[in-house]
Length: 489
Ligand SMILES: *[C@@H]1O[C@H](CO)[C@@H](O)[C@H](O)[C@H]1NC(C)=O
Ligand SMILES: *[C@@H]1O[C@H](CO)[C@@H](O)[C@H](O)[C@H]1NC(C)=O
Ligand SMILES: *[C@@H]1O[C@H](CO)[C@@H](O)[C@H](O)[C@H]1NC(C)=O
Ligand SMILES: *[C@@H]1O[C@H](CO)[C@@H](O)[C@H](O)[C@H]1NC(C)=O
Image (tube, rainbow, N blue to C red):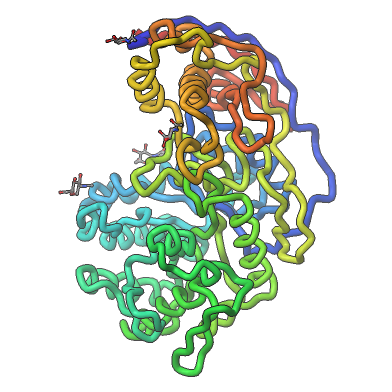
């Protein structure tokens, strides 16, 4: 169905980014954010960097070394952690020349005067997840070693640390008590090599900890224990008290490090956050509660009972990503503190002082036309609607539909309209993307329910198309001329 063909021609000229000297909110320098770009229509990176600055965010973790993204950090003091995707580990682990090339082309190139403040390389991302069937167990550590050597050879070893972002599933948390912790048996040897390396190179252990997943994966999990504001459940372990799963999880890692013979390795939180849609626990209220508790704790410079020192943490995440894999669950596309269009979702205080307000949103975002695609009113026979919806949802994002999600109240007709609209918007509002064999029609009136719970979005112009289509920066002003012809055949 709907193999379509279209030509879109857009001509635009925008001016954004006046040199803002506003006094933005104050965030402490140890707080960072993760910025992922698995989106059909990513926001222009210069706009995002500006948004980071206006929210006083000084540290960013990205998942690769896309020069388009890194370039936007040039000349800023924002500290950047770059990543090497898992699929490159094999190449880099087996060949020192590849590692040298990688450093030269993806790091050194950006370090000139007025360049990018790169401070960490994460070699692989959650490479030991069980879902990867052990594919990266042999390559991750050798790749870390090679990148470390290559950085040293380039004279960057002191400035740029090598680590690997690991999921908390690398250690066993099945015991309620942190002291029961140890690295997973199937990766014990490689974990031992990695922590020895981190110890010797004075690099942090980077761990992603998700109290949300504890709740999501286990219906009997005591909900309050996922947050930071309750003592309804307290665990005592070796004279330490634990009233939230985050502390318990962190100290399980601390015990695992001790048992592996490297108790002094520092711990940095690579990802922590709470999603806002796609599951009954993924709500704005829960996200607010989680961030409030976490940020307060963090601002109080309180770590966990075993690691009481101030924490360095990267929040997950900055902006929703509508093409992120939903294999772990529909919530995956809703981790952002900002919507897809750079609008803040909820009040939050990044300085942890309980003074919550909306973050500063992205400026200069341009939306497609104010129009939506919905199921036609006069459809009597609904039998062909199901397959059309499935088709729309295969490439449109339908993760807000279903029980416990923001659009759960929609009926069958609303569901179909939502799905059609997602498909239509992601296909640049092409008329032929709103056909569905005559089932769909374009409307100018917003079909979103009036209670504000469920939003039928209008897509934004992709920053990717704009910049790659030929844009240039003139001293803080971005002037984009875009002439785009897209043809799907
Ligand atoms: C990083 O460097 C490698 C090796 O030179 C190169 O093949 C790759 O394209 C670079 N990656 C990016 C994102 O530029
Ligand atoms: C892991 O194994 C499962 C079952 O054998 C398979 O479905 C899946 O595609 C594999 N994943 C990877 C990344 O190899
Ligand atoms: C509805 O459409 C299907 C197939 O398109 C057809 O088999 C069915 O008979 C139709 N039902 C009615 C009530 O017209
Ligand atoms: C709407 O779609 C979702 C997801 O496909 C489904 O779970 C839900 O039951 C649908 N609701 C109705 C009323 O059809």
